Amino acid sequence: MNNRTEKRNPSVRIIPLGGMEQIGMNMTAFEYADSMIIVDVGMSFPTDDMLGIDLVIPDFTYVENNIDKLKGVFITHGHEDHIGALPYFLKNFGQTTVYATRLTQGIIDGKLEEHGLSETAKRQTVRFGDVIKAGDFSVEFIKTNHSIADAAALAIKSPAGTIIHTGDFKIDYTPVFGDMADLQRFAQLGKEGVLAMLCDSTNATREGFTPSERTVGETFETIFAENKNRRIIVATFASNVDRVQQIINTSCRYDRKVVVEGRSMVNIIGKASELGYISIPEGTLIDVDQLKDYPPEKTTLITTGSQGESMAALSRMAASLHRKVTIMPGDLVVFSSNPIPGNEKSVSKVINELEQKGASVINYHTHVSGHACQEEIKLLYSLVRPQFAIPVHGEFHHRQAQAKVVESLGIPKENIFMLNSGDVLELSKEKAEVVSQVTHGGVLVDGLGVGDVGNIVLRDRQTLAQDGILIVVLTLEKYTNQLLAGPDIVSRGFVYIRESENLMDEAQQVVSDAVFECLDSRVTDWSRIKNVIRDDLGSFLWKKMKRSPMILPIIMEVE
Image (cartoon, rainbow, N blue to C red; front, side, top):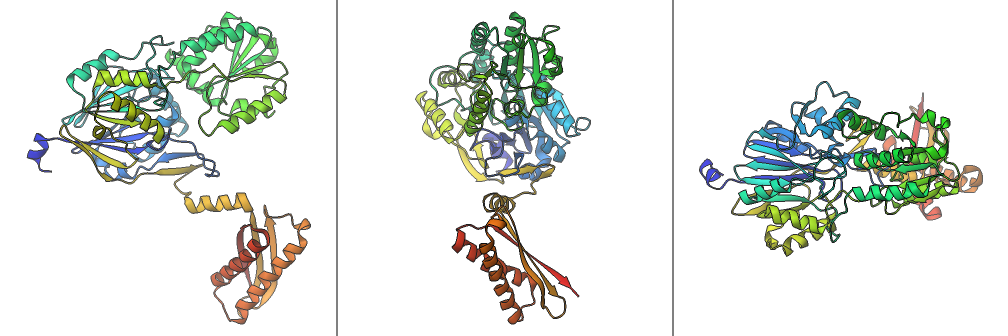
């Protein structure tokens, strides 16, 4: 496009690099001419078939290929699916600046410190209403409500027009901390004209409004009043500072001491308290070691593990693996969250373990979502009145539900875009279309390794987990290639050898036949011999057992 056309009909590009097919791994690039900004750099948790994987982060290849354009990273709020991949991003692109509100920046600081990046990474804390100039873009932070304080929407302005990214949001008229969402600013932007809006779809399948966070406080009031003679343990998300505030408030009213347990819970609550986002009366918090000094009915534990995570504090308590907290008969355990899709079995397992130890469990009416339902989505669209609508943050059926809501408001169907990760959506006031695809996908993080585990390694791990391994060991004479020892077979995770002697004898004979066949044919290439052993033994075991273990031939050489 020549410069004259660009000035007459400027266009901006929206490129989601993650988060379109799932709830997690959110990352979106915005491009105009030679300027690019990134909104959110999140991670997702591994699926069940990603054995040994710790987390999944977006593929940064497109950013790497366009690094000269990068003008800044803008973070909407401090949840892992929006900031979890930042340390890995900044290890590669540390020259860029990360812009975020105060609590969000505080949580980011903690993550960067863990990764040894706190001294080198560039950050700038912003306030609501601040406008950051970033190349051809200017980005304004707008107050919204969510299940974590300091959540922001972004008004991204370019010569092509204004784009609003809502981040994760709800409209809470009675928030626990701070003010309600700045609907007036959204309305002002709508009057000025908005080219497009990327809107949270998580609760788009639900009618009505999302209840206020304060309603959970009322529920806790009832629970504490009805259980004055029991120790109360509450499991919730570490990042839900407002929820923790309400639990602490209720505990104080009933003269209970509070223990905060779980590394992420301790870190975030510590940071929130330091920054003034949570108020804890002096003398309320005690260390877990001090629990023994107080009657159980005068204590409350606030802990991680509401999703049944195996290493979280509540899961370790339930499995009798926690070194300092033992579940006792009569304890009341409150799950103050809804299971994330896919976590239902893990949560159910923890509940069963808790009840087997004599604890009572409450896992209903103790949580409200941090995401907008249909009426809130309608309200925001009615205020902003964007020319184009882009449902984001959700699985396909969530985003499709938002598309139907948006269409009911009068936005033409052709102006609603159901993007996939990697799509390049080019927008101008005249038209919008997906013009290409860029490199995208998930990069697997295993310990300190980033991207060194791919599909082949995962397939091997799945084979090992499902069918085990057979190691075939034999010794050949170096010059004559004569078989001097073996073949011997070692089984791990396939069968118990002492109870399967006949099977192993037959397998050993199959390997011997395969080796002698190769030697008689004067095959000297060891890789060919190994392949023949794998093929013949694998075929035998499948016919005999209908199982396909990993087969690892090892040939030793003796002079």
